[in-house]
Image (tube, rainbow, N blue to C red; front, side, top):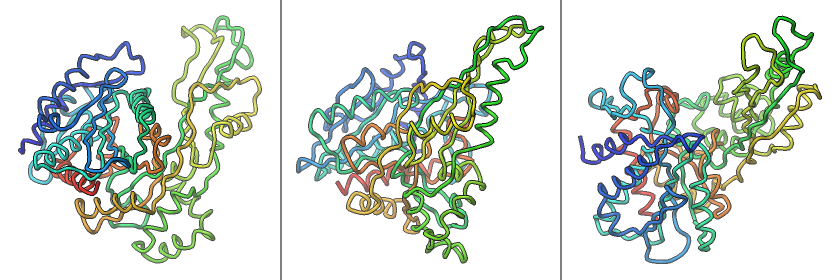
Length: 442
């Protein structure tokens, strides 16, 4: 294996696991990670200065020949926790399984998001070693708690704003190169997120006097809450095509067979029907055409023979572009139709602004895709389904995009945040070339 792959494996073996309760985080692992990248990439660290932000996030600056309008490449250091016995291979051993084009590194963070982070480091280090100087400044922004609070990236964005820095292009993790994700489209597509959905947690709670479970009331708090959850499940948010999804379908329309080509090219007429069909095709396509809401955490009585005085459900809501926090609360209130069920917004952020899919920044991305990942790959706008650290950077740039430059199968995408996360070696090495091409255009 190449030296780059061995460096990648070494960094994957450092368990930089984040937790919602930050008192449970082993911060020494994050210090170990920072020390490791300084040791593994000496040329880069001789050329680029860096700041430690918010305790453990990193912001590097590579000075260009001309000041202003820099490129910002983002990734995050932290990974989600693991359940060891679910994995076929130890999650922090970074074992290589298979041979030839099937050889894959199995490790937590292989894709999310050390795959991008280390590919960026490799690209920068190689260019520095070759005595390359970008025309404009290049910043590397590595947050330390994207999987939980995102405070590190938020602090980096605030620091850039304080210094008066307005990036011409910000790129974070996001959609990948995929095949078959868009119904009827067989060509590989680079799904570049031009916006991401908002995220909020809405807590529903029902109350009663409590007592012994042997003498339950006619309508206990748990039953009232269960009815509210069921009503919300039975009456989802309405479907529609947001501007990024319309642009995605219009972009791939020439590559779609008939009659889909005509359908995608006539969305003014066919849009409502297309939205309804996409909602029924699966979880991913459903999520791009509506705000989604699902009950996740449930709590009730402290014992099995005790009536719950308070029954609670945390509802995770992902807001479609054009929807709002206030509108989502009103939708839930109307659907559950029970004033005895209280609603509380625990935390929330609105959907991000939409970045343009035309202009210089977009052309730079599309050119880097075709030159490094294949001339047959179609770069298309995409609505990011999950939240990323990039949402904090929309205050300092109008050109914020979300793309992970790896060609991923459906099973590889399904392994994100699950067991057996992995990335094929050849796929990861091509990702390095994408970052090199993008930086070279700076």
